[in-house]
Image 1 (cartoon, rainbow, N blue to C red):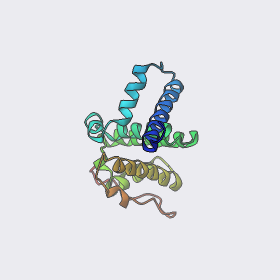
Image 2: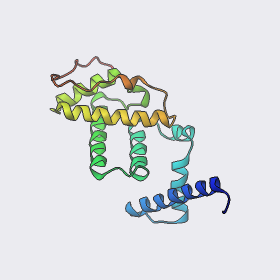
Image 3: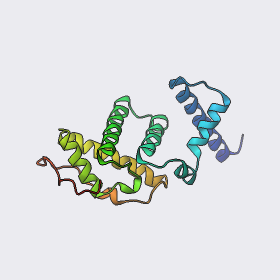
Length: 173
């Protein structure tokens, strides 16, 4: 629309979002229909309150986070694989601890227990540090998108080069 720069920018942004959805649907071998595009668009633009009512545990947020980063930020395939490996280790940790994590559970106690778990799996310091970094990236995304107000995760520290294993299980997880 000539003379309406702001409106044109909004329309261009929406057009790009819809094109990204179409690409995502094609890459996932889903049928590209108006209803499928509309549903995916609604999922992506739903307010945080709506998503919070639908999503209950940490791994469900992880899936939303990864979907967002793959389709919007267009992260590299290697990065997607690393995030997938972290997700698997979080799922294994949940099974080990006997409970599903929430965004509010991600604090220094969780960090210590997760480090202990990974070291017991014979993961290197670099692997453990990378997994914690991925979790912190997700948590920052969750805070930015108003899924949580938990900032305790910022106090989680990567293992130092001399660390062989952190404190033993305290029983919380």
